Structures are given as C-alpha cells and as structure tokens.
Length: 178
Image 1 (cartoon, rainbow, N blue to C red):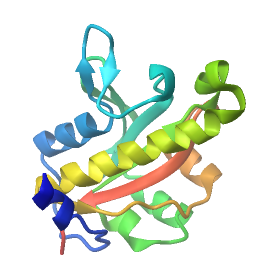
Image 2: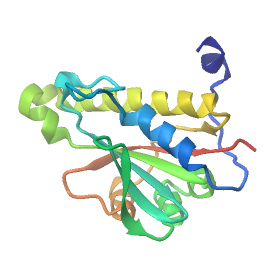
Image 3: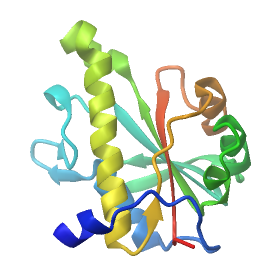
C-alpha cells in the first residue's frame, strides 16, 4: 500500500483504449463495493451507513449506474456522452479523452433525514473518500486519473440523465497514463 500511495498522481493525459471489464469492476468495488453483506456495509465510510452516493460510469458505449447489491452496472444512456461531460467541465480535455469517466453523485436528502444541517458536509466527505479509493485502486492497476470538481452541475446532470434527487459532485477521468 505504501508504494501505491507514493505513486498516485493526478494524470490528465491518457492513451487510447477501453478499460477491461475486470478493471472497471475493481474501480466500482473500490468506490462502493459491499464489504459486509450481512449488514450492507461498503468500502467507503458513510455517515450513519446511509450511503447517499451513486456511482456512474461514462465510456464510449454510454452511461452506466453501478449497483453495489449484485455488483453490477445498469445502462442508463446509450451512446458516448463524454464530449458533453467535457463541455460541462469547462472543456477540460481529460474528461472527454479518458476511456472512462466515473461520476459521483449525492442525494443529500437521504443523509439529511438523520443529520439535518450537517448532511451536505457528510456527503462531501464521503465523496472524497470514494474518489481517493478509486484513484488509489486505479494506481494499483497501473491506471491513472484525476479528480475534477470544476463543472456546470446542471450540464453534468443532464449528460448523465440523473434523477432530480442526485447532484454530481465529482468527475474522475481514468485511463492508462500517456
């Protein structure tokens, strides 16, 4: 683990080529994988174990929602939305050129039921834990990525076809470093 921590860098340039299904599976598991099936606990800490985050994968084939129960991807949008995500991210080329862009979206209301005015803070903390897990897993796989927070929220939500209950908080372009 010490080596992975030392090697992790924010990389914005990637070589062409889709990620393997195994790599995508491991990135999703690092984000929201279930570590205790009996209690439904996940790899990233969550205030009150409420899990207000939803993970989306955008690649050349479309947009997929990660469902931790069953460790599966469910297609939500057909077709490549990465150019739209790039435009929404103030035209940061890494968002559109990475073979995969993971999006982390939060449902603050789910956490507010228990934590009221602290809900947004707790959600943002959880998003940070998830992002770091994904970036460290990417590094361990010989991949790289970069956390992106500069984007137009409504445009990202539209590109990903998010329901109104979800707000995007992170984009994580991931691929093989150039």
